[in-house]
Image (cartoon, rainbow, N blue to C red; front, top):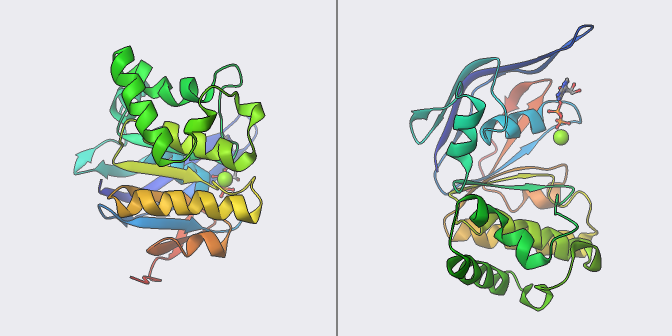
Length: 227
Ligand code: ADP
Ligand code: MG
């Protein structure tokens, strides 16, 4: 999937304060690219990722996915647009504790009203490829952090989305599990999935083709192309 933002601005307003989270962000991500977004805490990385993933709208500016303008869709339209097309991976895994591994992974397919048979086929396939099939009947709290994050990645990719957005996916993992998760993301990218990943880690950023640096809601440098 191809992403393009023009002059994105995001202002959070409460009664007392106004925070400019994104100031003027114009970026492009090409189809099949793996981009890392870096920058200090509070500079707007998660805000940008949420807008790219249609979890939120910008206050001003344009955003096109594959040439379709999506910056000002209503919440319901955003949900419809992103379902099946965009997979999310968060630092905190965000799995449902009461559901087994296979139920967690199948959830996006339930939302998309896949039949039980088709759901099982796709869940089994993704569990095999991410090496968690032996944990299908376990619950998240019975797994290591690395396994939980692999389950979250499986859930993100079970619909075969064109775009994965990852917000500090290794932030809660030790270095071995972190490498594991990065290898998964690297392989998904090799198979053609576009990835935008927020990270603090120079090591994780090495898996990306390109780094976009943010500072105070502005892109300060997107020229570190290491292709
Ligand atoms: P990062 O992910 O780079 O650490 P964020 O995008 O989470 O930064 O936040 C950018 C700025 O916007 C911060 O100053 C943060 O406090 C503020 N912010 C983020 N989300 C909200 C919100 N929902 N309401 C008010 N302020 C917010
Ligand atoms: Mg953040």
